[in-house]
Length: 217
Ligand code: GAR
Image (tube, rainbow, N blue to C red; front, side, top):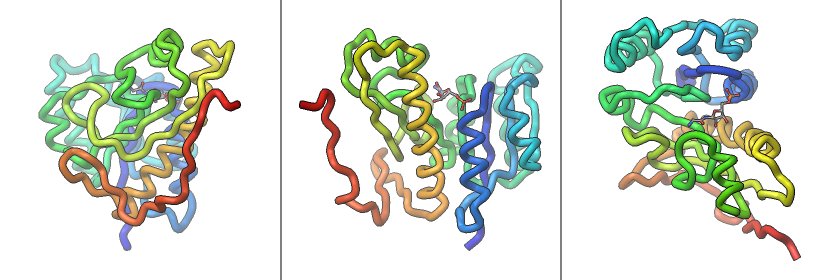
């Protein structure tokens, strides 16, 4: 079967991009990254794309007079590369409803919380302030409202005594690095279906995941 043609959009560090590149390097992986787009020329993650020989484009939002014009430039670049699926990986720009509609169910995002809890910024500090026992990450299809849309994969991590936001962020990031390649593989295998704004995973193993309890005792 032909591999899914993927574009990854980044704004910064690019550690999720790095794990997606590593996952796609396996010959049997059902997706390939054809294009990496950065919204800033200094996005550190661009180096991972260059190392892997992946085409890159820098589309600085400051060069565009409106969000609509910026998003139209994004779509033009994605269409030129015949992209099937767009993965946002630390892409810190709000996309217009028109862009989100154009790529409906072909646009996914990773967010460092168990959505719908803690959308937006400063998720880890807010999780600590709320005293939740678990937080985690979510890979979801994108809808027009920020950090919303049908959930594909979530991974939970415990909040441990004495955690600060940085420690919690590191634990969640490790979970992100598991969750995003898993979500991409499921989509590439054609096992992800959106029905009534919820995701069905075809062939999911119901018995595979025990419940988590925190604190233990
Ligand atoms: C990740 O933690 C990702 O979940 C978050 O930005 C970070 C990017 O890290 N995204 C959001 O907060 C989107 N709302 P990375 O550049 O190392 O992949």
